[in-house]
Length: 461
View 1: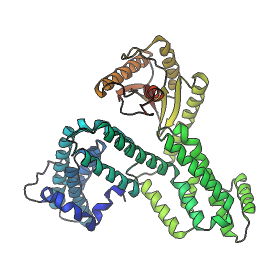
View 2: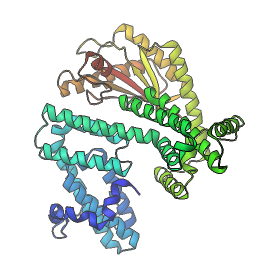
View 3: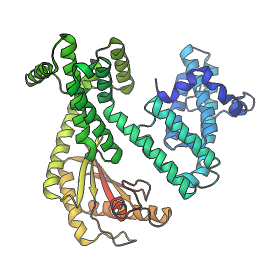
View 4: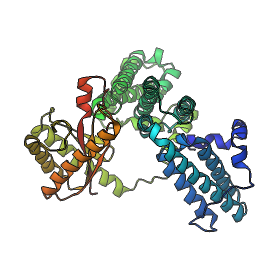
């Protein structure tokens, strides 16, 4: 079950909504939007569900909370009716009302967005990291959102610098927690399970090592949650230590009285013989407690909802990974760390160009920087790239409007230069102004890091 939808399933949780939405939810006078799906209830629910996801990406759920939530409740009624086999006209009516409410919410959000633009960027980073992926994170998100709406009087006024800084820190903290959960959930669960099974007495040294490596990885992520290249190694160490702890405890629990040092030797020997999988993902399928095992399997099903991993997809991903690794290896040989940073981000490879020394306030590429772009282009060509998105970023000096225009102009300049190199891939560009910082803007070093051009590369399967 998607955490963000859980509260609509429990009638007790709806009591606080009654005063707020009584007018919005009354049947009399509610507008019904025209549905492309017509009178087909299943298609109608699918259409409006997709609309809800679309406006959620625009953060309409924050900017027009009442109207959005009223629509969401109507959509929940339509979904429940579809599940229960209610009459088709009733389902379609609820879907049409939900669509109308979502459309109203989107219009209201447009009027409020200008005063909230900067804080929306911070919230967007938290959402992108997975702030809706679990009930605890979602609870934190709702709490911050509620406070923000109250402080800004439903975005009728811009936040003061002090309030902006306070909310930016809250969303950043949530972003950190989301990344930590995403990367280290398996290690945490393995450590918790081992501790519950008396690992403190049975495998004290292995448990202590796993905990230290886990805390180290948590701290590393907290320092640079948007830089996988900086925290990846510590995460891998933590996962490896958690896997070792899990395997050692399995040996001890399987043969009561086995000393820890002997259990460690057995595990290492089995691993050397290939009898144990070092992938920490196995932890979640083999937890000792039957109840915990069931819970973890359910969690796996939720995380992989709707996804079927075919053999062809696995081979394609493996092929892509090989190409990415070759590109990163080559980049390390021909590009200095001061010029560019290359790292994998999901299914893309990112080339972060640090030294395109644009003259202040201009988008003219210096001749010295053109050589750097050309070298990067040579590496991208070998990847058999399908698309390269050039992303321009600035620091926060100057107005947001000027920074937006400047970042777009610089991204355009780099995209045009790549195009003139007659590259064999599609090129797009986008300017993000100051909205996606990777470092604090209150230091010269941080501002320098934020003034950058990123080339986000996707490859052909």
